[in-house]
Amino acid sequence: MASDHYFSASPSSAEHLRRISVTLAGHSGEVTTAGGVFSPDHVDGGTAVLLSNTPPPPPGGHLLDLGCGYGFFTEKLQGRLHQGAHILGIDLVDRENRRVFLQTVKDIGYEGEFVRSRADIIRSMDESSFDMAIASYSLYFFPHLVGAIARVLSPEGVFIAVTHSKYSLREVTSFVPRCMERMGIVPPGEIMINRLFRAFSLEEGEEMLSPFFGRVERVIYENDLLFPLDRIGECIDYLDKKKHLIFKEVMENHPQKVGDMVSYFNDMVFAYAKEHGRIVLTKDDAVFRCFRPRRRG
Ligand SMILES: C[S@@+](CC[C@H](N)C(=O)[O-])C[C@H]1O[C@@H](n2cnc3c(N)ncnc32)[C@H](O)[C@@H]1O
Image (cartoon, rainbow, N blue to C red; front, side):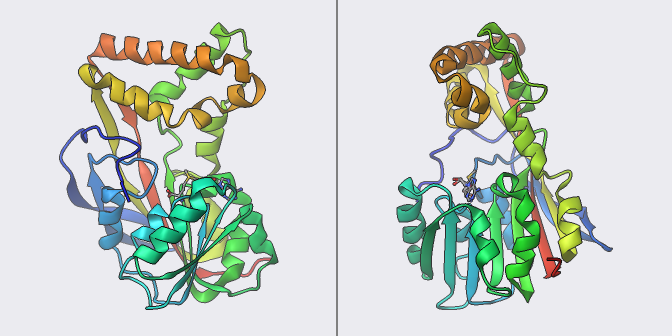
């Protein structure tokens, strides 16, 4: 599967691993992190490095990938699971997700199943149905389900959640309210993309997970995207792929204004890069590894 379809610019600095102290619920410890690597919206090389530097998930036969999309995370589990492991992908959107997810699981040698549904469907599933659950860049869409995820995991089950910093893309999300005003739209106090990033973030995720898991580890993965002025087109392409999130409220409430709004936004990105010679987008991410699920209703 092509892994560079979101973005193909260079990382801002060479990847290097370093040991850092991590937040552990009730424990302290060290893990490996990488700085200066870029992260598109899927588990990329940098996160794969982090995963390969942390202990493997407990071998078990039944996996759940919530908000699975194409199964980018699942792809990274190749060779780490029992032979014959079964991976259930659930996603609100079918489109290409079903086909690509099932193909991905087949390619890595496991059995796959795809269900088009809201993640809330897990509420009707039996307790202890899965050995591992994954929510890669998706839990912020359904943070209310953390308890339900703990419930469907076996007592030895592990939950892995990958998410962004709540400050992700702040350099450009700050342009959105100004664009809205220019289009004659009164901006909300907080735009949807920022609300979404805040719903389950690197900074506050542990607080949300700890009531439902006996042990939570957070692996921080600092990274950003640097676009020099002469590659600003790549920045604009990158942001265009995210326009359904960046301009979510405009798309939903004023679809006729989206075209003008995007072009005004692009002008602002370009003007910023021209003034500073480049633009750097914050993209810090974190992987949460959660053990000892608790039954709390
Ligand atoms: C940013 S993508 C991440 C996809 C994939 N996990 C990955 O890491 O590449 C978020 C995914 O969550 C799905 N999603 C959003 N809300 C959902 C919900 N309530 N229930 C299930 N899936 C949802 C979207 O359709 C999308 O495929």
